[in-house]
Length: 316
Image (cartoon, rainbow, N blue to C red; front, side, top):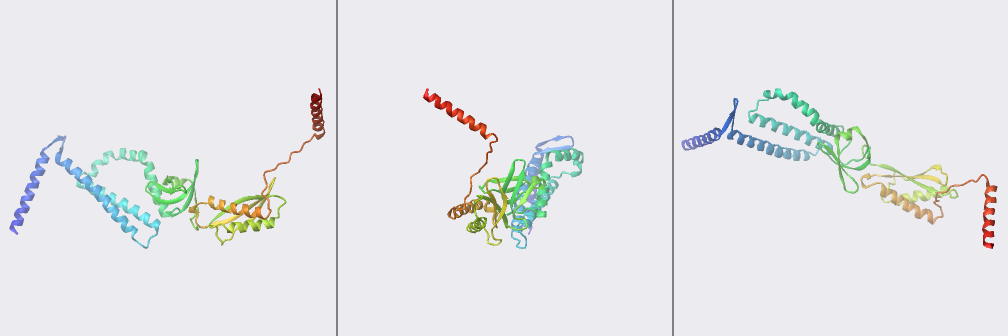
C-alpha cells in the first residue's frame, strides 16, 4: 500500500511540474494570464464536449428508436428533444470546466441577443416550427403531401422532419428540403392525414350521338381493370356537363397508395377506357365548332364572280 502511495505522489508531482512548465509559457493581458496550459486545456475541453455530445446523442437516439410504445412521430420528437438537451448540458459543462464566469458575459448580452435576433432568426424559427410540427402531428414521416407556393406545387412523401427542414422525396427520387417555417405558413395538402384512401377524378368526353348508359357502364368496367384502383369504394361515372362539342363525363376512382403517384393511375384508366369505348362503337369526338355566315347571298355572288373571272382568264 505504501508503494502505491509513493507512486501516486510521484505521478501527481510529475503532473504538477508539467502544468507549471506549460503555465510559465505565456503572457499577461491586464489581470488575465494567458499561457500554453490554458490553450491546451481549452482545446482538450472543446474536443471532449464535441465527443461527449456526439456519442451521448447517438446512444440516446438509438435508445429512443428502440422504444416500441412510440410511433414514428413521437420517436422523432424524442430524438430532437434529447439531442438539444445533451448538447445544452455539454456546452454548460464545458464552460464551467474552462472556468468562464457567465456573469461576466452580461455586458455582451445585449449585443449577443441582437445578433441572435437578426442572424439566427430563421434558424430558431425553423427549429421551433419543426418541434411544433412533430407535436401537432399534422405532418408525419411517411405522409404524402403537396406543398403549394409561388413557384407551383411540390408532391412527395415526407422522409424525415429535421431541425431545419422537412425532407420530401418526390416520384422521380429527388429529395427536396423545405424549411420547417414554410410548412407552417403555406398551404399544405396532406393526402394521408386521416386516411390513405385518395379519390381521383378523371375527365373524358363522348360524342352526342353516343348511348350515355352504355358509355358509363364501359367506363366503370375500364376503371376496375386498373391494378391500383380500389373496389371499395367502387368506381363511378358522373355526367359533368353538355359541352360545346361533346358530353363531358367524370370517372371517379379511389386508391390507397398515393405515394406511388396519381398520373400513372389516370393513364391506366384512360387507356382501358379508350380500348373499351372503341370496341363498342362509342365515339370520343374531336373538338368541333359551328360557323354561321350572316350574308350568305353576298358571299355566293362573290364566289360566282371570282369563278367567272377565272374562267374568262383561261379562255383568253
